[in-house]
Image 1: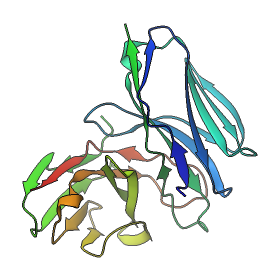
Image 2: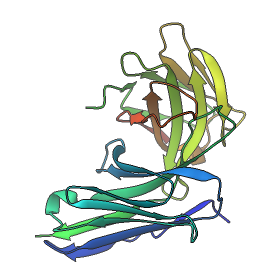
Image 3: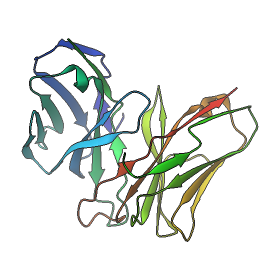
Image 4: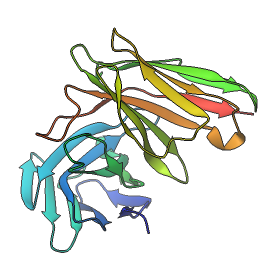
Length: 114
Length: 116
């Protein structure tokens, strides 16, 4: 079983729609939860990070973490064609203070149609 | 632009060959990470260096090795290349390397390796 599961999509929505992207994970040791956006042929860039459970909002983006269910979500409101990209969830645990390595989901390809 | 640079952008080589990928971290960042991104496996952590020393290893093959130099740039060496090594290789950097507090990893543009 993979440590992080993410539906690869593709997900196609009309402009202005609310988008919901999700990941599930198996290891309860994960403490930091991140969402990265990756445009085609580019490196991933950080959208948001959340520590432990709860919600975090940044403009049109909202990240949710439910540690009891081991479930994380990213919501995009009023989606725009420029949001078309691959969205990757990433998790970081506490590896005894030694490392900051990230475990990534496989990514969900999102296409927002004008 | 993340401030992380990687060279070359593209690399085409043959099976059995050896290549070196180079990464320069953001100014002031001490930690460098290498990731491999393939269609079937997604983005996989390979190895981390912090201030010249190896900090953590992931699913890195024995044919692969890396190092971080005193000027903090890093190189990933891939040898005895196989078709399955074709992938995007990303370097990321962060200010620190541990888990005390959150510190963001900034990704470079990647090197696309094609093994024929």
